[in-house]
Image (tube, rainbow, N blue to C red; front, side, top):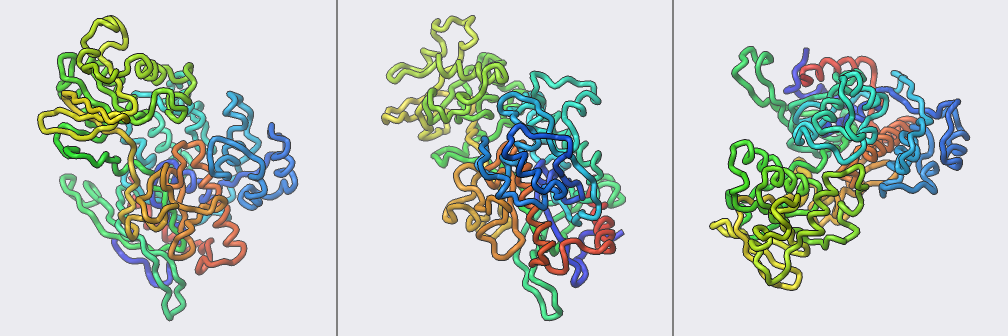
Length: 519
């Protein structure tokens, strides 16, 4: 069995390398492994226009159809048209609480399979393995599932109920890992790998076409080395006709960029709060915890501290009634814990000119109130963190307030780690002069193929949070767009080098090479 620290032999180029093994990479691997969606002859779609378009060519798979034509006139909660299309086909009318049967049928057609390799730092599932294990996910359980394996059926087999139609991150992570095994995708996954560079590789005089070179490190340990107590990082180098960026955006916590942000009591992840709780550092006698941010992770931190009766100062830039605030978009019945935080934000707001300690310690609300010990600062920002654990807050009107805290948590999102690309991937963003971020500056891609528009050459794609898709239900559309474009390029005999569908010999060779990665 070959090891991955050796270069591929001259002329042997892998058709597709996917960087990232979260749900984006898993879903694309499923489509590239020969699993193909068709319109079921017996099925109908509640959208009559979409159904009539699909019925025009019933013998064609969805990968072969004109996605732009199918997307016309569709509306949904994503700005990416193929994401709306695929979501509508997998979960028809789910936004209205309906549970229509999907009109798609999945056929396993191994002759369509494209040899590919999925690189990931940890086990299949990506960042879901690092998320807090007991809190419920934002999305409904069926929105988290991937094609071919119903999450609720899997949960029943595990003899666990999906609470309130939602599951925990730990359950979702386990589902994704099981999905890779259940669908026999393991040979395509290279775990414990870190990509260090992706560059355009020129062709040579022997006729090798231009392609992409992917370099990185594979962590190998234990039995692989013959010594369970040792580990090593082995370099690898791959050539690929196509590279898919599916890394997500959880790698680098966003920072405020203010004075004192690097002080030891200032944290940038929810897990640091959990660690402090497990060490017994926080209780009802502690100075308040300062939580900065108005997203769901910040709300989770508020709930965690509130559960310990630790006082909380909550700072965020928006007003509580801002329609863009995530809490104003969530149904109360489905998300009672976040509705509780929103109620706290509505009822316990700092009044300028009044000492914040007075609000936390006053008898209004009474100590028995569920909101005692919480105070929020809407339309405020952190101006500075001081070494004596005093934080300077500044309102939109310019008034400053100083609060004493035990710990500060800056939970304002995260940025992707694209350090393996030139200039950290900035040239690929919608605004090339700014860092790539999920919401403000995603990677600029063709809306119907997910091909990166500013790439140095053909064959570079991006999907998932990198193109603005935070929810699993919609990132599956990126997988459809990419798989469809790869299939159409192959049929056109396009710029995929020696052929996208490689010979059985090359496929078998790569199965051998990839097996050492997966564990």
